[in-house]
Structure formats: structure tokens, C-alpha cells
Length: 107
Length: 503
Image 1: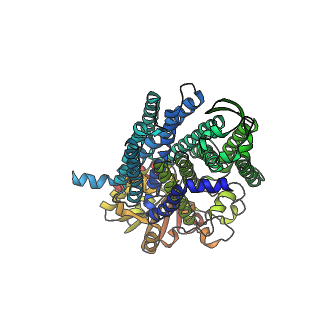
Image 2: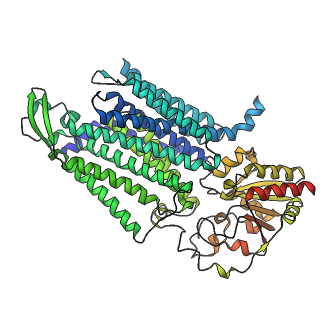
Image 3: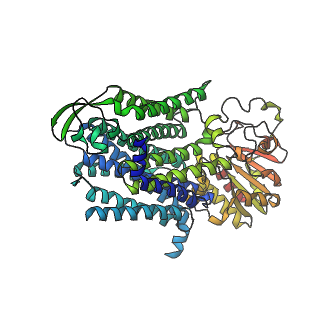
């Protein structure tokens, strides 16, 4: 019990962030028109690619003889980057099509 | 100094994610929003590479990190550039799976680290431990729980997304067996029991074996710990597969959205592990937003999330009984259809997955322009769940340059149908099935639909009389108002265009 309490005490900032972000996530997305659902899902998909930072830390902390951390970290870095880069590029491609008309008018 | 710069970078990154998501939900700023989020991500990634330090030590292995970034970046950009617009849902699912796998791998490495250096994680307490002792209070159960959750959720998201990807591109068919839901629940229960068991008993699994010098000890780990850990990993992978396999194609968007939020939560677990607020904000934002989006999608189909996950929609049992009793349908020739469209004053086009499969969006736009030139008022009626993902049709039609103002959402379209002369249904089925209103025994019952039957005439283009994704017969096709125009959407539209040009 004490173990849990001290963990919660140590992580209280993080727990506050979790609670607020849940509300914010719901609030932000609540007013999205259904037209944008697919790009939004794709954009959100790219944002959770932030997990790549964890992969970078794993890689960067690995001692030269820790082959498990090195190989899994390397793999995780590749997969995470795929998620981030692919996600943002796909979303941009979708949105580019929405905006094509307006951009032509401007130029 | 550098650490404070890094935390400022993380703050900027987090704000960029929030602002990006906010802008993504507004048509006028959506693209900018995506770029803002991407910029924040880039900043956070490079900040982590160059500025991160733990216990005064910087990250090393830069060569490996950059090699990984380069490989993933190039492959991801190429895949995303080359994918066809119709294959978009698969692509999102695939990328989502990659993120899930990334989170699971991180947890695996961290767990390995934990069982090798169990007492270094919570406090620097090596010095107080005597030889042969166990020290349960020195291992933070919260930390272990977060590692396990990140691993289990990431693994489920990975295997589930891969199955969703394979199903959407036709490599895998729906598969279910009797008692599957009970079986799935059983696996899930095993995972939960395994995680709680491991968390509750982890401390007992370590024993100080030898004291090497005042600050360093050797620890023996009980062999059941890694076994249980990899057992949970295996079960989570299996659960992801089992969970997505029986779900019908019509529900795939819901599933992908749900898995998307799973990966968000898994990423947030990583945020806890490294006390990294950018990961935490990004992950939880997506977790919350993804869950809400999932619920919104379910609502559009008038089904509860539980129903999607537990009740398998369509598939085998539905629709067979009523198939024969519907009576006969009538066909219409291309030239007649062309004439009908040409002499209507308002035409409503209802696109569906058939249009996407046939890649017919460009021809469809051509037809629309041609009719508009002839003075016909042409609009598109977009059902929220038409195609494979909400908004899928909008993306496709936008690709073909169809104007934003031509796309009617369901409520608007339903108001216009009574004053519409002809409706052209292109490869849509379940979203125009009147059984959703009239037949309480239909699996579609209660789903809001496009009331195309209110129009004066309905022309349905389909490849055959086969039922749609929900596996239900569509009474619309047998109504006197309805004429069937069989054929691949693209070739039919091309013929229509040629015909109308000659009129």
C-alpha cells in the first residue's frame, strides 16, 4: 500500500497531466466535422508516434554490450519513425487535396 | 542548463500537439495544424537526441539512432507518398501498428533492465541491502505496472492493427468460431491476472546474491519473472489478433480508431517511464481523442462500442432468410440512365465503397461537371460512415477536385431528397438500406441512413446483387422507384459520360 502511495506521490504531476489531457483531448475533438474524421484520425495517429522518444532514450542509454537493448531499441526507433513520418506525410497528403482549390486561387 | 532547455522544448512540443489537434479539427486550418504538430514532434525528437541526460550522462549511440531515423523516415515517407487514396485506411492501420510495436519494444527493454538492476530503479538503495535479503519496498510497483501496461497495450495494438491492415487489403478474411467471445474474454482475464500477479509479487522474485563492494550488489532473479512477462506478451499479441479477427469489414474504421487510442495510451506509459511530459501529453491526448472519435463513429452507426466488440456484425448469420422474398428488381440501361440524369433538375450522388474500389472518383467528378454544364444541380450525399472510414469519401472526392460545397452531410442531404429528381447510388449499400428504419430484426436497425427513397427515382450502380458489408439484403433495390445499373463503377460512369455528351 505504502509502495503505491509513494509512487502516486512521486508521479502526482504526471497524474494531473493525464487527467487534464483526457479532458482536453475530448474537448478539442468534440467539435470536429465528420468530413475531417479521417485526416484527424491519421493526424492523431502521427502524434502518438511521439513514443519514438522512448525508443531514442532506450537506444541512447544502451551500453555497448547490451545487445538486447541495442537491437530492440534500433528496431523500435525504425518503427517509431515510420509511425511519425508516415503518419504526418499521409495526413498532409489528405489535407493537401482539401486545400488544393484555395491555394490555386491564391497563387 | 541543457536539461532546462530540453524541458522548454518538451513544453513547446506538447503545446504544438494540442494546437495541432485543435487546428486539425477545423477545415480551414487543418493542414497547418498537421504541420504544427509535425514541427513540434521534430523539435521534441531532436531535443531528446541531443539534450537528454540521466544521472549526468548524455545519450550515446548517435550513429545507430540516426540510422534508425533515416531508415524509418525514408521508408515511411515513401510508403505514405505512394499509397493510393483508397488504401488510406490500411496505411493508417499499418502505421498505428508500428507505433504500438515501438511502445511494446520499449517496455521489453525496460523490463529487461529492471530484472538486471532491480534496486537501482526505485531508489539508489544498493548500499542498504545485505547479502541474501529481499527488499520488497524498494521496487516501485507502479513502475512495474506501467512497464507491463505499455507492453501489453502496445502489443495488442500492434497485432490488432496488423490484422486490421491485412483484412482491409483482402489478405485475411473474417474468421470466427463458436464461443470466440468467451475465449477472448478468457485471454483478457488471463492477461489481467498475469499483470496483477506479476506486479504484486515482483519484489519477492529478487534476492541479493552477493555484495561485491559497498555500492554494488549482484541480484538473482527468480526464473518465473521473465517467463510470466513473456507469457503476458504472447497473450497480448494473441488477444490483439483474436479481438480483430471476427469483426466485420464494416466495423473496421471503429476498430482502427480504437487501436489508435490504444497506441496513444501505450505511448503515454512511455511518458511515465521516462518522466517525459511530451510523450505523456501526446499519448494521452490521442488516447482520449481516439476514444471519443471511436464513440462518435459508433454513434453514427447507432451501435454501442460493446456491441461492435462483442457482437459480430453481419458475417454468416444475418440476411440469408429474407433474401428470396423480396420480389424482383428491374434493370436500367446506360443510355436510359443517362437520359434520366440529363433531364433531371436535381441529382444527388451517393458514393460508397464501390466507388473507392473502382477508383472512380475522377470520372464521377467529370460526370458531375458535365451535368452541371447542362444545368443540372448536382450534389453529393455523404453518409458519415460511407466507405471504410468516416470522411473517407470526402478525402476521395477532394482528390478528384470535387468542390467542398457540393458535399452534403447526411442531415442536409435528407432534407434535399424529397426535392431530388434522381439519386445515383455508386457502390453504396448499407447506408441506404431502409431496413435500418423499418425492420427491427435487421442488424442495421437503428442506424441513421440516407433516405434516398424519398427522391423521385433511384438508380443504383452495383457490381452484382450481392449484399453489402453487413451481409443484409437491401429492400431498396426491389422498390418500384429503383432501377439497377450493374457494372464496375468506373466503366459505368465512363459510359454515362459518353452517353450524356451525345444527348
